[in-house]
Image 1 (tube, rainbow, N blue to C red):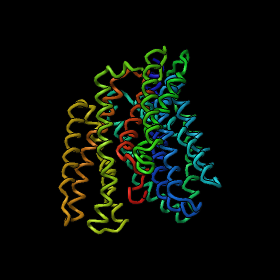
Image 2: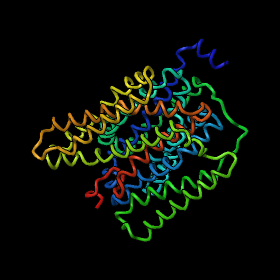
Image 3: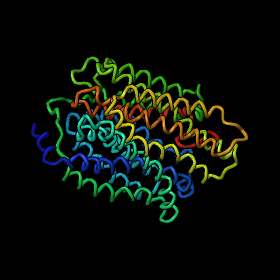
Image 4: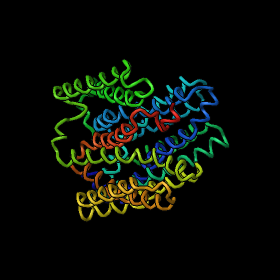
Length: 426
């Protein structure tokens, strides 16, 4: 009741939360683009092969993906404000360590810390927004969040290229430090404490087994081509993933306070939204991998122009996601999300029929159609996922939402090193 009165007294509070959380959303997505651009420079600076340097990306991705659900559970226990801002502090400190790292192993170690921090932040971003805004505005809120993500994806490579070229690759990490410091102090002042369940115990065994299952699976998929799909290392990764997943389910069914309440999956709204999100990202990711080859090798376009053409997808999502979210608030999520998925499917199907002697504009139109479908699908689907559970579970659901996105994107690439085509990896 007190929280409701405070919202009536200060109706601008929800926008303050959006400002603080949005800075974290933008920083994390911006960092991904900046670091990817800096990879070629890192190979020269450290005189190291790509197979070593790719761990700068891979260590971060594995860590953040494996810790999303435990981080969401931790936030439900200790408070989303505290866990989110703790992630901000750690992300800034880890970024500083990345910037001063003298060797590749130390840089990779600092990126692991960044992954821990990223999980603490990502698992709570959407949950904090969902809690701050009224339920009738949930779709629009998550749409705004998607717009910020898309803005970070759009500007990351551009800003990363400028910083790396003008100031050096270390500043690609240092840029996170002032953002983290400012956002942390603003967040401490503005964000309210959220309801917590302090009488619960953290399921350490379940969290460890989940982390092991995710890391083993993604490591096997990512390195399988270079190790050999039938090699002992690859088979050991897949075996460890299966064994850890089975053990995780066994533990979660027997502990009183599990990392993941498996009864959530009996909720059709939650299960359907999560499965749809995973399949959507699983289908989208290969497009971002293959289209540069079409633009550059088939149409003969320069690299810079190819990158600009690919930007139409996140640009379309940034423009339309808040609109689709608002529509879902008025008319419900199911019909709008289904329509978005249908449009996305049509756009992807049209890419199958791209002609060899085609025009760039023709391809861009098809990518725009896909982007429109993504924008119409993502916000209503996320709104349905968050609306299907009690508010006390928002941290866990926030972690699960981010997990479906990461797993969908990563498993679609199978044996490719993160962010690199097969040919380059070879």
